[in-house]
Length: 199
View 1: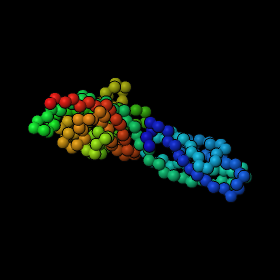
View 2: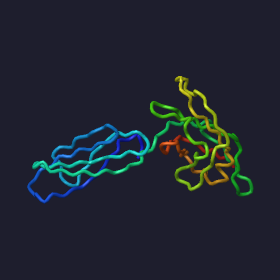
View 3: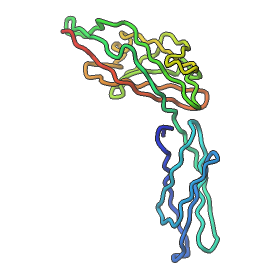
């Protein structure tokens, strides 16, 4: 689950009083959603911060009886990316594709309210086409205010030849996915990417 979308929690319950009516309440991180007049199965939706969150669901019947159950959910931080350049050229040589240029990609991971991109753990970062099994890791990282909002963003450098050699891109690639970890939560982000062929 990511912070870009509300988290939906599905739950079910049973009551010996078959004629009873029920109300539910979902609570996590100071956020509470009331779900009146529910029947099993049911669901509730909460907007949660990235990291491990405990959601507690309480169901109360019209006789005053109630029961609750906590569940732990890991919420992933959705990061905004910019990939520059957003295309590379591959050329065919004796039946094998090679990188014709450029040799280095820069991936800018933007900080936002509640998310410090510079807290990403360098050794956790991978980049690759989400449709392929391979990934590449960055060779360098530094902090820079790319969008000039007064907050440092993270700049990651990747070698194009590493992406190709590791099976992280191929001739059909149209998007790259970055995965990483902060001390508190996993991070994911996507950016468009083009492969130009020079055969």
